[in-house]
Image (tube, rainbow, N blue to C red; front, side):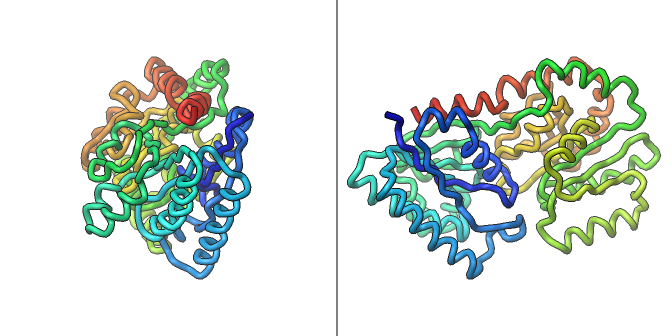
Length: 368
């Protein structure tokens, strides 16, 4: 008989790394054929701006989630529990509450519990107070951790109450098939009149979009166009963004596409040559946008935040330690923009490490 797996995870909306991975797991044919799966969606925020805020709706959704998990434990009786865990704020206390159900259930029934972390910040959270340290040790007691890369292991040095650590790098599917990639590159670089540079992520200031925007006024007389795409977290950031464009007369070389998905996102990646993501977002762990850029063979300029140095190497990207080095990195990337050997290396690195087939095999290996 198939093992029973209860999966409690995030699903879109809103669209972020954890919800995209949750959608992939829930819809994956291979995983659902291997195991008898029961899925419960963690419902809390409908937009990026709602994350971390308290509301009556969230309290209702928490109560609903608690009783759905309780019902699943009693009726479904899982042998494995997969749970998307949070690091801090209101979501952490929600998770603490849910974990008491797991622990009581585990007292009566043999069960393997896996907490999948899509972010970082445990060390900072437990260092803030003794209460945070105590609660996190309780939360992690006798569970297995699934981390995105070995670079995030040190985040858990102060909380050693867990059982084992497994590593599961994020992954994305590729719209361009492996056998079609050569034709795609030939057509794309047959005649390049304008170099298209892309920032695609949630429009959160610490993710670096404003640093890219400030750089643009130096390229007004070049055959370069800058594209931004993503959802706004704050209205005041949106106003500042467009005011800056007007102040420095950048309308001709800047396009803001808003939140895009599906065909629009595919078309934007296909036309782009360089991907810029100079993030210093405190929770940045393993950005899917970089993996998407790699699947299209884009040269990436990013920072050494979180697991980004695990994803990218010196042959596939330009990693910077400080955002003031952004202009120099872009100058180098512009020289390499037609380097076919580099483009194919980036694509191969993606296929070997960050394709969804690799992810599903890794996840099945962990659960087994």
